[in-house]
Image (cartoon, rainbow, N blue to C red; front, side, top):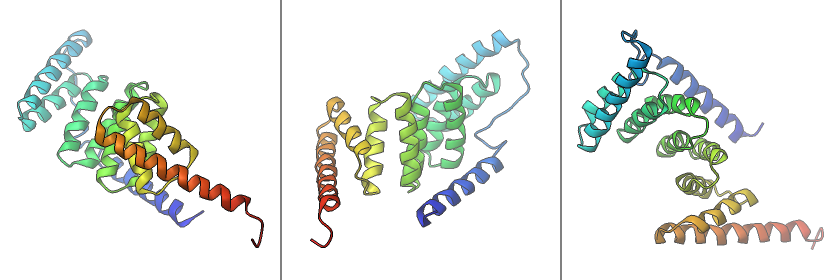
Length: 210
C-alpha cells in the first residue's frame, strides 16, 4: 500500500470515527413522533417551507431550527436533510454537514446533489482526494451534473491527475458549460491533460536506452 493510500485510509477512519461520535448532535435531531404519520409528513413539509423562507431572508439560525423540526417530524425527507446539510456547510460546520448530507444521499439514491455537497465540504476542508471521490459518486448518478463535473475536474487539477477519465469529464463539461471563466478553466485542463498523456505515450514507446 502506498503512503498516499495509507494516509487516505487513515483520514477516512478518523472522519468515520468523528461522524460516529457526532450521533445525537446538531445534525441528527430526533424526537418521538406525536402526530399520525400522514400528518407528520404534511407538518414536516410545512416546516421545510418555513425553513427555506427563513434562509432566503438571511435568518440562518431560525432556518436551522426549522430544518431540525422538519426532520424530527419526518426523517425520511431527503430534501430536508440536504438543505439542512447545505446550510451547515455554508456556516463552516463540515462535520455535521457531511453527516446530514450522507443521510440525504442514502434516502434518494438518484440525486447527485447531496454527494456533490459532500465533495464541496471535503474540498473546503482541503481534502482533494476525498472531494474527488464524492464528486465521482455524484457523477455516477448523473454524468451531466455540471457542478459535480466542475468539482471533479478542479479536484483532479489540484491532484495533478492526467488520465482518460478526467479528460472525458473535461470534454463533457465543455459541451455543457456556458460560463466563460469555467470554459477557460476546462480548456486549460484539457490541454494540460492531453499534453501529459502524449508525453506519457512517448515515454512508453521510446526504445530502452534511447
